[in-house]
Amino acid sequence: MRTRNCSLMSAMSALVLAMVMVPTVLAQCGLNKNYVKPSAWHPQLGSAQFMHAALFDDDDNDGPSIVGMWHVIFTAHTINGTAIPPDAYPMIDNAFAVFHSDKTEIMESARPPQDGNFCLGVWQRSGTRSYYVNHLPWLGNDTANAPAGIGNPTGGAQITERLTVSEDGKSYSGSFTLVGYNLDGSKAATFTGVVAATRITTSTTFPSLL
Image (cartoon, rainbow, N blue to C red; front, side, top):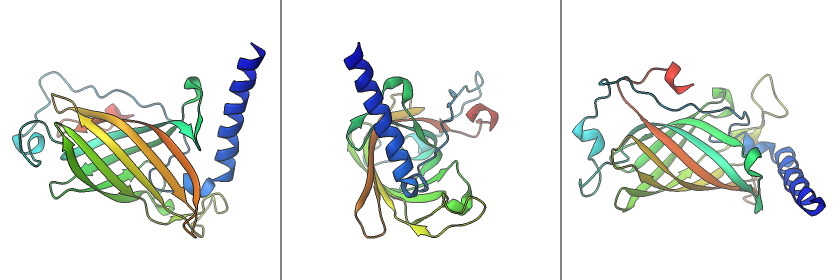
């Protein structure tokens, strides 16, 4: 029991230390420091209408596509190679993502705009309903030292995702790796975890996303 407690404390200590040491990484688009509990998407019966163009709009049109608008949750399972205890998994982003048919993507994160809450990516189809995403948050702002305003530029990040759209086209899930960088290009922190998203339609309401 003592060994188990020591392992748990070591993992928690690593998590806390990393959060303290890499505020610049957490200031990037795609990294929300608030552990907000996501809610499931609940469409009203009979109200969800999915257009053919939204569901079938990728390389071969043989099934549901990732093209469209999504509510996306990123949850970290490791930080700098250290596993995070399951009861302490942090949600590091709560975002809207739009995938375009030209294989570009844009994401708006739930954080103050002045901190840098928009970032861009590209995607490609990797299999049946499967996709690879290369997402590049640009330079952010040092919010830790400027809580009431806009801080100095900080390093950027790279998020790679492997995603699979559900058979009904209403959700997708997968894994991600996030590497945060300092201004000189050196690594500041690495996160890995899971992604879960629900499609946003003309019937989606704001309260249903909270």
